[in-house]
Image 1 (cartoon, one colour):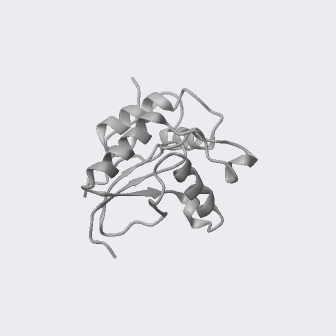
Image 2 (cartoon, rainbow, N blue to C red):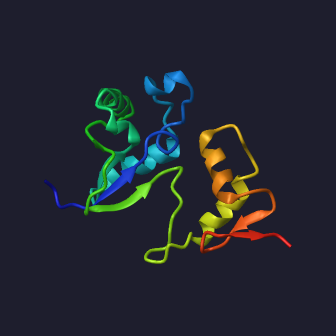
Amino acid sequence: MSNKMWIGVDLDGTLAESVYGGIAARQIGNPIASMLTRVKQWIDDDKYEVRIFTARAADSAQIPIIQRWLDDNGIGGLKITHAKDGNLALIFDNIAIRIDENTGKICEDCIKYLNQQKFKYTATPRIQAMAYVSGMTGNNYSADGFMQTDC
């Protein structure tokens, strides 16, 4: 096993466009060009290992689908996982909210994101979860993760 630090890159919504509905389990969206370019650069730099870090990896039937997508997009051979280990350096993921280390506090930029996004959409489960953690209209997150009522 390698001791090289690695960068985890989420697949759906980060490296590939999200696909919704019943076909999501059988299909991976089109590549997101800017992220694909970034991943290829990291691979070429060889400073960190790059792994695909996706919940899909919990289902062994998804592994060949992911491998084929990676091959088709010029980044075949990357490890695919859904688990963290001690060599994980960073995770790039479209739904993660960063917490300031050892504080439990939501980072300031993530607070801004939550407060901006919660009113834009209501259709997707992810946005519904944001609305849930963000509370009702008029409430905003603070750094401690608590709601603050607008004056």
